[in-house]
Structures are given as structure tokens and as C-alpha cells.
Length: 149
Image 1: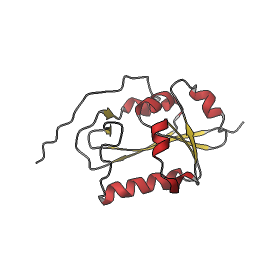
Image 2: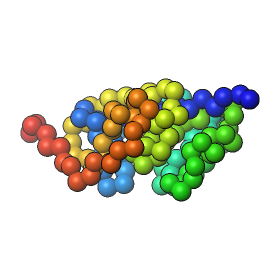
Image 3: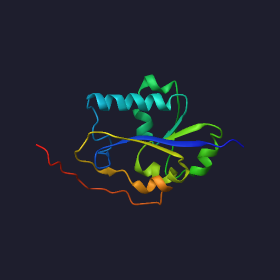
Image 4: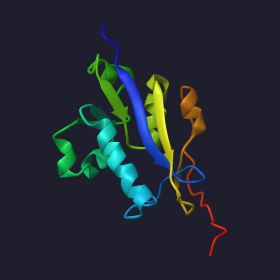
């Protein structure tokens, strides 16, 4: 049986920020680094499967829907069973901490871009995911304060 290749491509802020109020903390920033990161995400995932929660899948723009297979996953779904459906394919796991906690043990490649964002967040990257993902509690209600102006 062909193996499913499981990957993650994501961006984090300078201190590991991932999310803020259900979105990306840098959402809407049109600076070149942020625009390039989004374009790269769509380029890297093109032609592959993207498994993510309903909010993440709903946020995929129309132009990107035709050239990748989008699959909504939920916390009640068994990751091993879900991944078996895509034997021989490359599957990207999206959607942030709850999904990465469930799928981290299957991920063979983490592609993490560190963006020049140094502001508040309520979701953080957990480096333990990189070593197979011990189920951890997602840090909440933690605010990073910038030393800048």
C-alpha cells in the first residue's frame, strides 16, 4: 500500500504567534513578506489535499479551490482513518492548533515561515508538534506586548 505523505506549511510571528480572534494576527497586511507567504502557501499546496477545519476551508478563495482537494476535518474524526483515504498522495494539514495537535504524529515535514509580526495573539505554535506532537493544551489568553512604538 502506498504511504500518505503528510506535511504542514504555516507561518508564525516572531514569538510563535499563530492566531488572533479566529484569524491570522497579520490578516490584511499587504506588506511584501505577507503577500509572498500567502502566494507560496497556495503554490506549495497546489495539486495536493488540504485537510483543515471548517473555518480554514471556508477561507480558501475561489481561485484556489479548483487546483487542490479541500477536505473538512473535525475533532471527532480519527486522523489515521482519515489519512488512509489519501494513500499515495501528499496531504497538507491546515487549520491551526487543534488540527495540528491531532495530526502532528503523522507529519513528516513541517515548513514553517517566520514572519516579521511582533504583535498580540491568542494562538501559539507549539514546538512539541515538531517531534510527533504530544497532545498539549493550546495556550490561550496570552498577549505579547511589543517593545516598539
